[in-house]
Image (cartoon, rainbow, N blue to C red; front, side, top):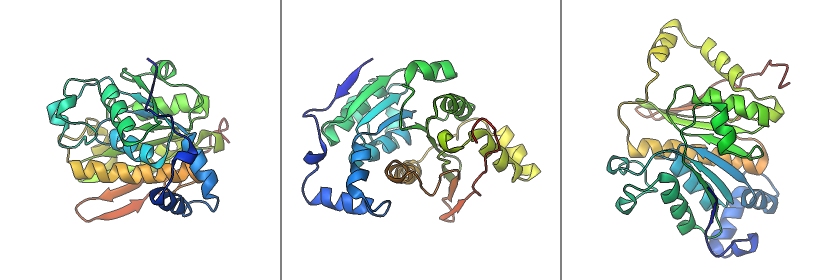
Length: 272
């Protein structure tokens, strides 16, 4: 396990030309100091757990926006049935570890991206400690198994004060958020408790029975959720805030409606 660096090595000055100017202008939506925002992206260190239909596309967008370093965590290999929705891979990648294939893809779209591939299935906080450094700027949770993964990542993140973000697609609905920042009092447990309290008894019963991933997947649905999640992550990295900080966004694909949960208020004394 080690760095894979796309050549030539990239610096802020190598983002040049009209496309760079337009990107920096766009960052002005997040903060008036666009130069500082671009520097924060170039020096950002991001972990991505699960690099399939959501995680791979999130990494694609973050790399193109300027994020400099990635830890790519996945134990899977590229399979033919991935290609309808995991658009960072092609037929030439079949059988390759996803960590290797995605590292090559990110290096092909932007020079200077540094990646560490970690071929491991995450089930415990010990797995995370063995896979990720404790000083990342953000960790993306994009794997759909095991069901308790968000809570496992939250436990590790609380100890390392690492911000986290999550994205998932269910049957007819896409979800992204919350972005949780433990250093500012954010807590996944409190968010989940507040969210569950707002469900009806019937909704809780359905949710408790539906612990398995969705039985089918659709490329556009995964891509939309991944793009919205990446947009919020870029804003968070540039400015420290975003629409899903402490909140979850839900997109109903059939109605094309987006709703946001209420922002949770953490009551844990260890994070206040």
